[in-house]
Amino acid sequence: MVNGPPAVELVDLRKTYGNLVVLDRLTMRVATGGVHALLGPNGAGKTTTVRILATLTRPDSGIARVAGHDVLGERRQVRRTISLAGQHAALDDGQSGIENLTMLARLTGLSRRAARQRATTLLDRFDLAGAAGRRVRTYSGGMRRRLDLAASLVGTPSVIFLDEPTTGLDPRSRQGLWEVIGELARAGVTVLLTTQYLEEADRLADRITVLHDGRLAAEGTATELKQRFGAQRLELTWRDAAGFGQAAERLGDRVVHRDPARLELAVTTDGSAPDIRRLLDEIDPDRHGVVRFTVREATLDDVFLTLTGRPVTADREVANV
Amino acid sequence: MSELAIRGTQTAVMIGRSVRLSRRNIDALLVSLVLPVLLMLLFVYLFGGAIETGSAYVTYVVPGVLLLCAGFGAAGTAVSVTTDLTEGMIERLRTMDISATAILAGHVVASVARNLVSTTLVLAVAVAIGFRPAIEPLRWLAAAGLLVLFLLAVSWMSAAFGLLARTPEAASGYTFLVMFLPYPSSAFVPVETMPGWLRGFAEHQPVTPVIESLRGLLLDTPVGSAPARVVAWFLGILVVAVVLSALLFRRRVA
Image 1 (cartoon, rainbow over the protein chains, first blue to last red):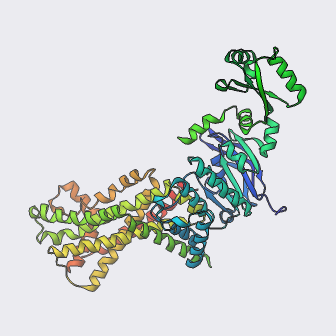
Image 2 (cartoon, helix red, strand yellow):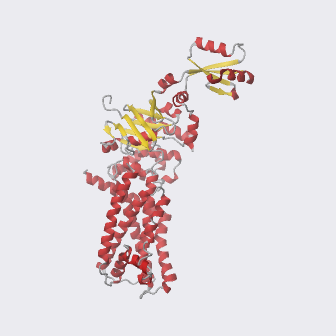
Image 3 (cartoon, rainbow over the protein chains, first blue to last red):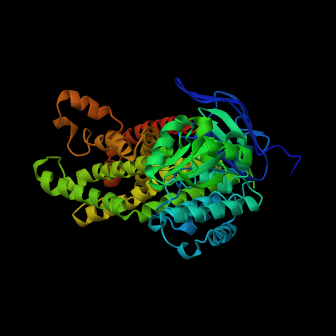
């Protein structure tokens, strides 16, 4: 599928609500196949982007295409290509898992029998066969999300949009969902997911687009982003609190990470031996205070902080409200 | 499959869904079945003795209770439409290219079906406590036809209210209008007993010809132009509701 149109193509996409500019001439492209993450803090425009691509919101101006089809002019073709799993699992509580999926499969045009078959296959694949006959009302959060993902696959879409698929899930369910998303991509579907969890983007996505204030802040693989926007860092462990405190004061803004409980400080470095030797000599001239050091790759957190000027933790709290 | 056949199947699936969900919503189902019967008993035994209608009060009040019943059923339609909107089901269906008409028709047809069940129940209880309709199959058929038209129009209007409301609670509030309308009509007391200003309203509002038609058709008395007025009113309301809900749908869901 190298020569086909990209799975998603946005050109100068703009969307405002009153005075609020949600998307500010966003231009981006998602190649066919694999998992692509839209990463950004709350209000960055992730959900709006996905809703425009899923034909649920009209952009003010600009172009949005899915698999070469314009979301406004060729809405029907777009809808036949895509599916969307939103932030809330859109399922009928009063129907069982298999009834929900059979209903949706019938709506895509399958016969009664074929629809039931498709529902059974999907329930197996998402590890829900045991709960197939139970009303969705009795499902756990993780099960609902899995069923929601299964539901978004009934029409065999080639592009799937997942809007914060794991927000609000416990770590174990999240892990389970990550595996399922990975499988989708291996089955040849293009997955575009939005997330505010860096770990999720790091683990799942082949490519990441960082959105900030409705604009593209950066794009690349996780490794590329880390190399480009976050230097490596030198983590130093101090012998005692006094030495730790003095060093922290002396270094001021240069400290990129501090952990008083473990007497750890970190500063950025290019990772070369001369740089590390120079830093050690500068920070600990008596060669007495630092007992241990480690050189670490930048994390996506560092990238995120550099690009958006906001630490991730604050957003994570918001996401869990 | 042709476009029409696809749309037909989609509508059928949506109707099946709404019927199944209403069948399983035991609380709402019980309320919509038991409440009209209780109301009828209340009117007949509590108020009936004090109201002079020229015939047994149960005979007089049955058509009114049937319409009250429709009001309750319609409220359910608005709530279920709003719930589908707020819980994302309508968005999922839209991204699957399911038409607005199919989605709303599912709710409306289920509402009509629910109402026909509760109507039958009310009639059965009415007969048990002394309602003696005339047995005229053709007139009964006409009465049933008018009632279905009324239910269709009121349910579709409620679906439109459902699209207008932001929360299911608000949706249920909107349908108060539908539930209230049978009172200032000839449903429970003769309009001659009302003060002049109210009487004018009662005589000309759409519910009154429905009551007059049902009463006349079930009891085999002259109905005059009432059935024609019912058809005019409720075909009109149905058309307005369909157009209005299509517009609202486009506003709420791109």
